[in-house]
Amino acid sequence: MALTPVLLLLLAYCLSGVSSSAGPPPRSFTSLFALGDSYIDAGNFVTMATPVAPVWVDKPPYGMTFFERPTGRFSDGRVIVDFVAAALGVPFLPASLANSSDDDVARRGGVNFAVGGATAVDVAFFERRRLVPFKLLNNSLDVQLGWFEELEPSLCNATAETAGSYGGGRCFSRSLFLVGEFGVNDYTFLWTANKTESEVMAFVPRVVRTIASAVEVQAHRPRRRGARRGDGEPADRVLAHAPHPAPPDEPPHQRGGRRRLRPHRLPARRQRRGQAPQRAARRGRGRPQGQASPGHHRLRRLLHPDP
Image (cartoon, rainbow, N blue to C red; front, top):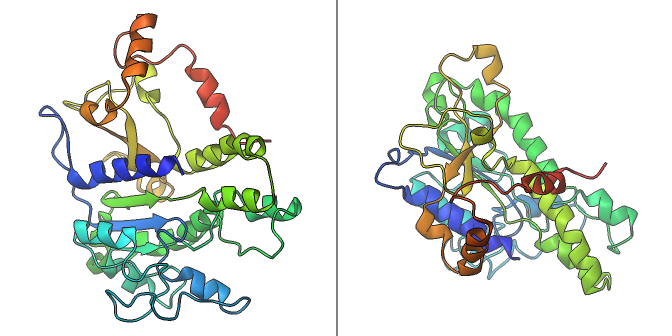
């Protein structure tokens, strides 16, 4: 899927702490939360599918080259989120459907909500249109977000000993959220239903809107409203996303509901690779670097979900 290299690039930036010389110091993440499909799953598929369908990833050779036993991962060793956890210095994330207590999740520094076979679009979309000849597991992006919301209060109300990984009173202010990969299964179901290339391409915007809604893309929106930019924060960079810390003067009763994502900025040298045609187009329009296109409202309409 075309989005995957972009997600990996943004993730690499978040982990490396790369910034300009005038930018803020690297962010220190102490916990990790992951949503996705089989590229990320650490065992949730096995838990969900075992009662209703044959399962194969709980048997060798899965898991044998690193864990020396099957763990429910769709790999003979680790999956990408395990490498991210190692880079952050946190333990491997437990699968959200595993028998882990809230305190155990807090101590381990996060949780993995990903499920193999998960879709971005709700599974009812595929079942109503009979695009799959079998019953799908209810594990789409929206469902995984629901699992996170159910777990959030217990984590944010954890004791002082276990809440440190999440930033103490500013819940999740030091947490990294990995959203994706999503989309591969959505397209696979369409291809296997013998849809044409044009029909699959017409479905792409819906998948993109669904993923974008989950991470709440707001590129340059604070700048257009005249919001204050952080010290040394450049205004001409692509936006990635990380947890938004609660302002110090925000009333405590409002902090529990903060699930917005705050923009990180990708260094200009990272976004310029292979984009000479886009630079030429900008020169032709005569806009300064970093200025939003007059047609940005068209993108915002695309991101709104279908009624």
